[in-house]
Amino acid sequence: MYIGLDIGTSSVKAILLGEDQSLIASATADLTVERPHPGWSEQDPDSWWQACETVLDALRQKAPKELAAVKGIGLSGHMHGATLLDDAGKPLRPCILWNDGRSGKQCAELQAAEPKFLTLGGNLVMPGFTAPKLQWVRENEPDIFARTAMVLLPKDYVRFRLTGEYVGEMSDSAGTLWLDVARRDWSDELLAATGLTRENMPRLVEGSESSGTLKPDLAARWGFDTPPVVAGGGGDNAASACGVGAVDPGSAFVSLGTSGVLFVTNDRFSPNVDGAVHAFCHAVPETWHQMGVILSATDSLNWLAKILKKTPGELTGALGSVAGPSDVSFLPYLGGERTPHNDVEIRAGFAGISHGTDDSELTHAVLDGVAFALKDCLEALTVAGTKIDRVLAVGGGSRSTVWLEIIASLLGVTVDVPVDGDFGGSLGAARLGQAAALDTTDGIFSRPALQASIEPVLALMDPYAEAYGRWRKLYPAFKQAGF
Image 1: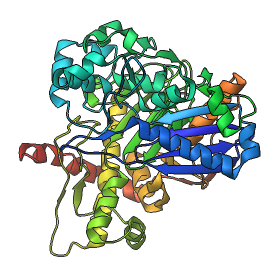
Image 2: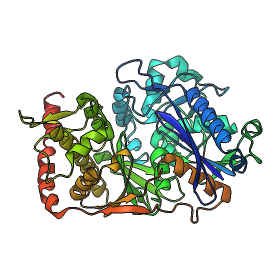
Image 3: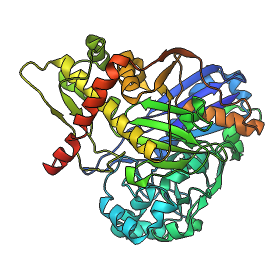
């Protein structure tokens, strides 16, 4: 038996898997995000632990016999969060989250002062990453910075509470900007740029390796026969890749969740900093990955549904199929954008609205706009030398067949749709827990069964290519106009 713990931004989810990876039980506990100032996004680290206690208590209540036989626990979590601990392991302040935008000034200064962030770190210095957050604390909360003994990522704080060990793993740590991504080790030079050393960092393991064992008192609390090993785990997208079997070079998935991700597994470190591609280590050994990331995928559809006082399903259901791109264009930059613009200031907007524009046309424009943003990601990955011919679709947006048809036709790829099931970070985390417990990755990371494969619609490909060319002119126009 194996447990996957996924520390999400809005909730913590736990799943319990059998030896054959069948789902035995699951539980979820909600989390809240605090926004004390515009552009800030914070969370109490202890709320993650309290939520983990809640879901593990629930698993014990639902399946006590199966829980007792658990051999391994895997962890997944939202990336980049700066969790600052004192020398007693106590949080010094709320965690600064991945979608916090306060450190724009520090990003520009760090990138100018230390060019190796672009080479060793392999990524642009963005406000979402951890390093500029620490530089902001260094400049604005010097007393907190001086007392900081350890910096952990969210899931690694949960690991500390589970095992008492300060341990990180490669995929999540690559998102701090302190990792030499090609060497899979901390960089003394990049740490020094923000006034830190290796003493402030956890030791590193691979995601499929053991990072320690559960504390005896916790093992007794939840009724484990033997304290299970706790795997290194993975950052949320790398763990999701393990859940959908995207661990071999060339395998890819598109995630239509709150944010949107185009994820490709690589056999080497392959950055493209000019295109704001995320180039990170994967959660399995000797493997890397690239990601194009857009910040508002289903978030854009949810926003429109709220404005129109309908559900997202009602909007996409009423749309039906499409015969071509919408006459209305939409930039899905509700909270800025990452790939390819790295622009926290740009905002969303419609263009081409007329007296005849209705709910269906606005919905169509939103689906197109998110697909165009994913096309931007594909273009950036192509510049980095990556070729994709098929992707697996995951996330809530993948329930919309028309959205997947638009994406397939625009990107020119086959979109595989798995049978209903949970292929998020919790499944990948559980699989990593199984790999750590069995000390092997053989046969662990299989691809899910498919319910459909959506091919590009030939009649849509040229019209969407032309519409994408027009859409690309909107970003510079909006930027010049001060949006």
